[in-house]
Length: 350
Image 1 (spheres, rainbow, N blue to C red):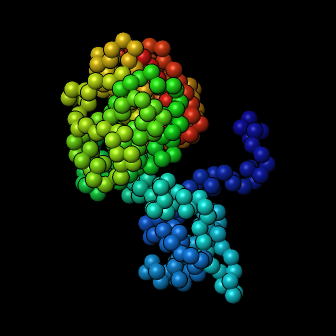
Image 2: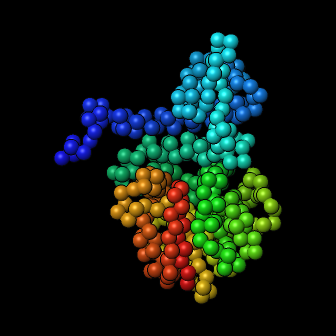
Image 3: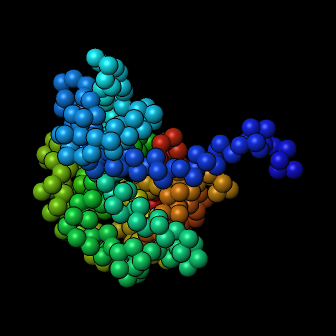
């Protein structure tokens, strides 16, 4: 029966399977080009560059550089033309905007985290499936139960992780901030708000509300030191631990990419703590990648859920999963907004 639903071409030659098989290689082409500085170099150049010129500037082999550049052309990330009989390369607008480090919308930090942290963990995906736990011990020699040590095991790793979070809200922040009308919440606190990127989008969308980032003291210190704060003063930073310490007062607590990190009992304890801290009419905004109710998609959310298995202690959920957690801790009037991008929004009130 299965064969009847496949096209003749897929039965004769497994195009889609081969595309999936080679997916990690495609990723590594982009990762390596970012690491070597290809996109930064081409962005700075006033004219297209030959492979020989690029190799000289980056101290790489001509042969390897030419193959890498041609692969990027094949992926439609770079462009090539012929000048005086020689191939010369230039960036596309998409590469300049998202892959060059100097762009205001650069995803360079996200790529570095994927390449240097997530990629080694995914080498142990089969072990994670067998064992049902993260693979920080095999990948990095760290205890699987000590998630914070894995995420913040060095200043370099902390910066990579914070860069990842910052890049995420470059893409999705505005859609999350405007998924619901939050203008009725005068005090907004982004718990675990990291660099403040999402909080800044909140401040832009709701200028009459005060917006605060509440994160671990070392995260706050690093954010203020390494991540430029546009419109200084629009977002306030406070250091603390929302699991074990007191919470700053708020009308709305934001948990963006937090609940998916942890097992159910820890999620329930945190949400109950937020419920107790809220006044009637106060609320919580969860930001997560939502699965379909049957858990058969979207593929991005399914991949994210596997990443929670291999790296953390949690999972991605369908809307009913988050609604259940919220209802069990006292929240009601749960609303769900699918943004059409990587992350979605769930709003509930006390």
